[in-house]
Image (cartoon, rainbow, N blue to C red; front, top):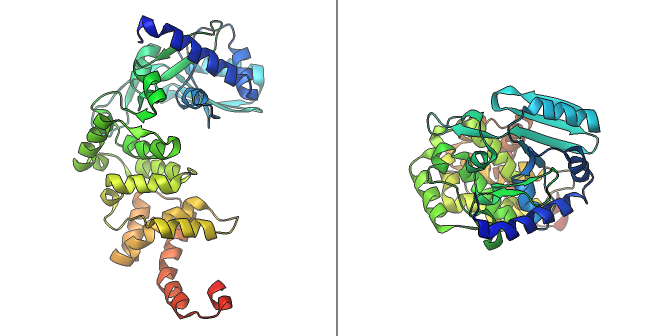
Amino acid sequence: MTAPSDDAARAHAAASVRAALTSLPLGAALLSAFAERRDVWLVGGAVRDLLLGGLPKELDLVVDGAEVDAVAAGLVERLSGEVRGYDRFGTASVCTPLGGVDLARARREHYRTPGALPMVSPAPLEEDLQRRDFTVNAIAVALGPDPARLCAHPRALADLDGRQLRVLHDASFIDDPTRLLRLARYEARLGFAIEPHTALLAGAAIAGGALATVSGARIGAELRLLLAEPARVAALLALGRAGLLATLDPGLEVDRGLLEAALELAPPDASPEVIALAAVGVPVAQREGPDALRSLLDHLCVPARERGLVLEAAASAAPLSAALAAAIRPSEIRA
């Protein structure tokens, strides 16, 4: 998938990733476990993060041409632990004493309708990389005997070096509109710029109502991933700039000062994800009433405990504001 002139760059990148993996207990174990296999590759965000000099949040493997269940069972036998399989998408999760690994068979995806879950079938690794969300995530490094094997989208390494986010094809946000939220999450986490054509495609998808083709549960799951980011404030601001919050509900808004103050004043045992959700959600209740906020949280399938905390925050916002306005002494303000 990459030009012959890129061979040296690809070999250097592959060697860098494998060297970084050896410093991670689980990474070193995977290199050892698959040292004789040519069909198992480290893929996606883990490769991206290692090339950027960071630590990956998870290790994802793709198996090119073999059954995932057999590969997962062999890994469990070598490292101990347990495996869970997901037959529909040809994936498995392996939990080991050293950490968790997700495996997937290389596959192609077909979307029968915009926003639907994809239909999948086995495919070569090169085609698997073409189905991914952004070029910087379309990189795979072999774990087997050849330390110089790297397979990538043609623009992947250049975009990684240029620190920009680019979709792989023009229908990307139509096929899977949750990528719009992922775009904001990666923009905030990585500090990458959005490639101009990708920005135009995202704007067109938002204006065209692409999110309406996706279930609230999927949007809510992606939103909770965004709220779990350390850069959650920047990610929410990116959602606001893009118009995605207003698409979910006109009352959703990000008051940066309020959000940052709330997170700073929160006690150590507080959940920053819930605080952030409350900070953007409370204006819905203030403008449209508590039932509107409850309906939105239900639509996004927010878990019951978090939903209750946000609704409680909305109910107490007005009385708390009035009490603070009337407080004079520092002890009253603190209380």
